[in-house]
Image (cartoon, rainbow, N blue to C red; front, side, top):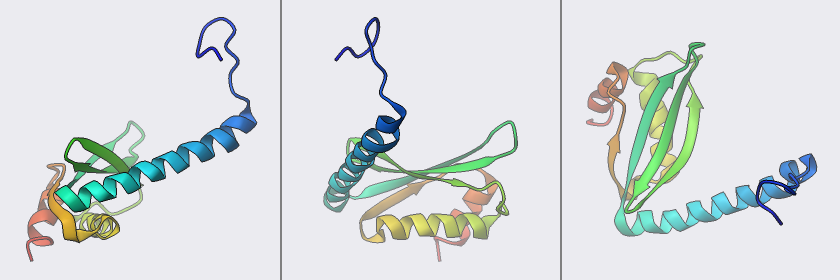
Length: 125
């Protein structure tokens, strides 16, 4: 099968929405499970960064870094959430609990005021 160019036949909508998507989700889960083994062996870092687009939608991305790899964990649409210390601390706590606190080495966050406050007031208790 040709990958691109003359003669390339794009996958059908059905292939994209069923078979290819199912395979991609399964592979992503496999990679995550492989990474969890690395997290247990080497520890991990949670990375978080937020951004706001031109329409005032706020998205916060959470990633997990370990040894030589960084894995995207999830994005949270925070557009309709109050942007304060407690809200961010709760989101971060959910991520830590989801990944597992036992092998966490550090958390690296955006330097926005609410994030920095969450670090000092919530996680230093």
